[in-house]
Image (tube, rainbow, N blue to C red; front, side, top):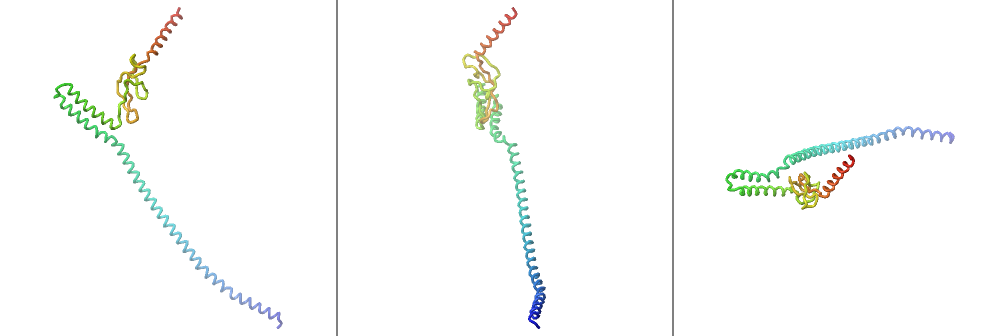
Length: 217
């Protein structure tokens, strides 16, 4: 047998050996891949379960917060309703003693020895009421002798008065009141008129009458 034939036979033997070993290698590789796939599936399952648990936890927290907010909203609405419904309770409680004083005065008015005694009793009750209003921030608008101001006064009429400047409040028909910094009732007043304006108006009227006479002639 020549060298070439020996080499050829040797190559064929090697190929046959490799071919025989190859299935075993493939089987081993497949066996190694199966555990890896199983591990990945287990990991994915764990992650999914963990995410579901977190979602459930967040949903539970959200529901709790929503319930707490709803309860807070109801409490706030009730507090606001009670505040508006009973806002005047404190003030009413304070003026009840004034009502008591008026009732006592009326009960004993027939026993008064003079009109002056009745007047004194009424003044005491009046002063008490004014004091309560003042404590609540309610004050009178000081009008008489002051310049007319549309922010505080309602002019009912104008009168001639040479003792004061024009547009001065000379008489107060109805008192005005302020609550803190807000006018809650304007004072109804009588105001001095401008004599100069009245004279000008009178002169204009005379001039108009004179012009009408000239036109007629």
